[in-house]
Image 1 (tube, rainbow, N blue to C red):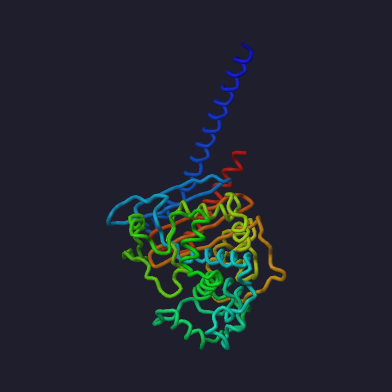
Image 2: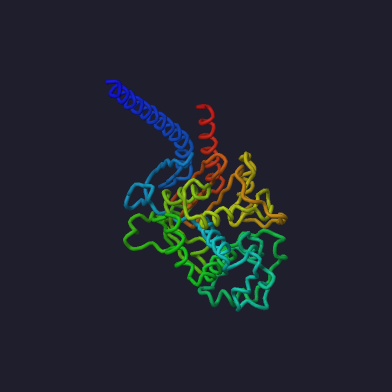
Length: 389
């Protein structure tokens, strides 16, 4: 009799605990939704954004908020699986690939670029190393010049190109630099970049719905992009597009990637180490710490400083080398923005708070608006968390 009573009490306790847990979970979800809605709805209205996907990770739990439509033509609603062009956010995967190759000993960040690209020997690239490529300190310009349509033409251009600055002295955001980094990292593994990312890195990261080239049977999930003037557009891939800005991904995959950056998901130990190494700070420039592609700010950070840093990303600025490099930190806000002619993307995460955000939109709109929105959402959620404790 006593055992039956004890068993009944145990079951009752489990049921009660489960009910309390579910209630707490629903309350937290409702609070987060309230914060996200309060920021995102005015943002969509102000910028006439057809569709938006926002994902939040907090203490290892995901929250998804989908707004609007993938296309004005089909009227299909946005979901966590909707594919968006993520622009320069693609560069973070080139950084992970290079870091992974570093761990496996197939390259070193101190190696000269011309060591891997023989056609560039005897040029400026004898004095530019892979770290310069990964930190935008090579002096290379942002865009591949017009008229260059293949790798051979690009190599010919680079052979005769001369940097306006000594490598490592200035930060100049460069698609070419990160593009070369990704191509070299893949080459060091005896693979093409597409093979290394699509068949290697994405599966290892558990990113099952991310692509460099969207397969025909997945085109149904590929959102239509819109310019600032609301004209429909999708990306036209050029030389080094895959490495620099060519990934199409979804909120579900990207929030998983952010969780992996904060060690909230168990993955291969060497890959985890490679990801964390991309958070190493190598230069200070324009109020931000330049990691391997990622941009970093000591936390807490004022919105004014975060906006100033993001506004300066595409501007030329003096770079100061950190000696020794700053090891990966937790009390920081790490972020990266991306855009194509018809899409905008932004991610930010704070490892010490185990919180991160992904904002995807099928329209290009001002960076300051997306950065402000992410800042308000993250701080709104953290404020609500403090009040509930």
